[in-house]
Image (cartoon, rainbow, N blue to C red; front, side, top):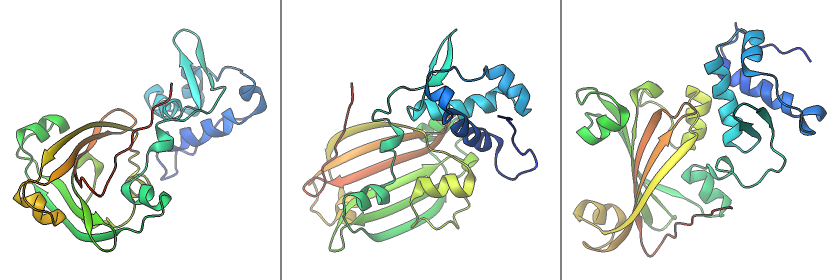
Length: 242
């Protein structure tokens, strides 16, 4: 098989490299356990940097399609077990799979100056504005979650995007930004006046609070998300495999 990508194409090189890798690993020899071509050699053949190629390989490793061992090589994973990417869904996609119709009660997009904690997470200065998206969402009859998302300026959002679309699908298709890693902190707290008003509950009502830190394939921060869920309307489930 001749390995090549189109350097004149508007499609990012790492996306083309990923597509090529998916074609390569589907071949019978690689399915049978043959090691993938050496990274240095393959990057040279494709006329791309090793970093670009590794970005594509990391995506497939993260999906559980490839396994990589230091000083040994990379090959196709023997079994497709449950992986993080299989569970990587936007809120809209997750609710659709559960058969739950969702209504957007509020949607606000603004540009704000980050506080020190947010600026430190994005590794930017506090005088550089970031896009903030706020949404109140729920069933057709009542809201049960308030989201506040902040996006790194590097992502390239303008504020004119259709944020009613699945978020991570839109980021990938329109901005070539692939949300790959999610780190979360979950805790319980009481609703203050602002959250109580958004979720239509009384002050002090219990809510599930979730912080989500989202990174791209290069483990660069792209989104800082805060979610407040009405406690009696939502169950947050975590599935682990061993």
